[in-house]
Image: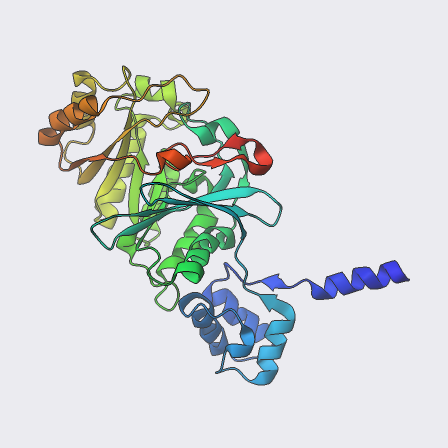
Length: 363
């Protein structure tokens, strides 16, 4: 009898987490509770726009409704396990999910401007297996829910205020388009006019090249920014470092990228990590320029960040600037990006979630 009562008590105490619920889902929730549909819209604003998670303080609800909500529901972000701060101001956050799996988020300030970029994760681990990437060495654990994706942003705003970040990029651990439905749901919460109210131009999804999902995203109407993890401008070289290239061929991928640019009228971004003595020659410059010819795009050049146990080498600063200088006259826009957060393993390809898993994870 005592065991039964303990089990009953725990069952009663378990609350449903509303983090990740959309406007329509909260409207249906209110209807199911015997309330008017518009109450769902009010609750949506309280949670995502006003960041009020205490139901008893939602003053446009009756005391009875506030109590019913408080008895059954909560709005809770993943638990923070650790924060690291780089000498350049970059911050890395390690979160613990409900099933004790870790996920990491990086906040990158842009000194001299109001721009603050947050790099969020969409999966625990990654199945793509890029050979230069720390996450790829970890393997795939599971997809994040929409609530776990958006929860990374909600935590930052609750902790640091509404101006804690200005831009969101899904370049953290995982392949966003392999978790398409949850990622799209999270993006809809980000850009909702009565929710987080982010501009579509401030949200970027980065993919290693899931061609069918790129087209699907183009047709979704979200019109957010698209980034392609390219890293090699020929099919042969791309296959050597990115196994996904064997399934989604470079020429077909570029067709869908061009479709995305035309359909959404946005400028596509290409991420090109330079590895010493692999993709850093004049032939690579010419191949890259040819690949993007006629496409509205921006190319970000990044120096490879060393990952323990992998043989790839970081190029010199001179090589980076030479490559950028040769590429600049041949493409619409090229930027040589400075690595951020390298001293705390928060730079591109370095993100670590060693607790629980004993291995590293990528940004």
